[in-house]
Length: 311
Image (cartoon, rainbow, N blue to C red; front, top):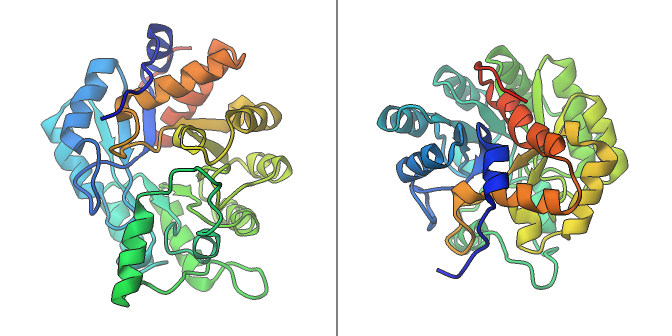
């Protein structure tokens, strides 16, 4: 593996007790840097509280329970992403995930209509997402899931999504917006808040298929959503570091949530992601308190950690 930056001791200490709420690790349908049990052990070694297992294709609540039992003391949480492999906007899948203790429900990512339309929008030199090849393989086999729409022609959320949001609210799970467009995200966040969803995360607003303006991000923050700032988005060249920093400043660190989105074999170790992002933020002039809020306070809010967090 290639050389990667190493987090500073200061950053390690600053993110201690945090959750990484967006990672991609083995077992998976594509190659990953590390498996979930090994990662849990590494999180324990560096003082991180836990992580959320994200898969674009399968539910992960059962895996999470196995890992928690294998590595006591690290809070590994399951999730569900509403792509075609689980039936799209499927309230039954959400209900089952909720009963199994899944923490986050992502709206469609690889199968949403917006992501399909934006697939050719990667900046020159940016590293393409690993799932792009799998999607191409499925298309070549003629079994790619139909694109999933979350709003109708009148701009209202579709009935299936209304059912999904109601189930999320019932189980007090976290709604993450997936790879929707800016207009779709705004519509969905407004509807989710009205339907009683308490915790909403806007998935990587700087990603190539989102590119949310500061004005839109501010509106979403006013509705109570947290804006997710992923390490990999600037690290892999999908947005500049300066743009990421500017968005955090203009929207407010208190409305931002740090995550890594790591797990790819060619990227840094997953357990380093939050601290590496903290180092970049400190170098850009953010205070330790601001970084702590984004890395620890807000990730624990999403994870619903019950133990006290010290400032």
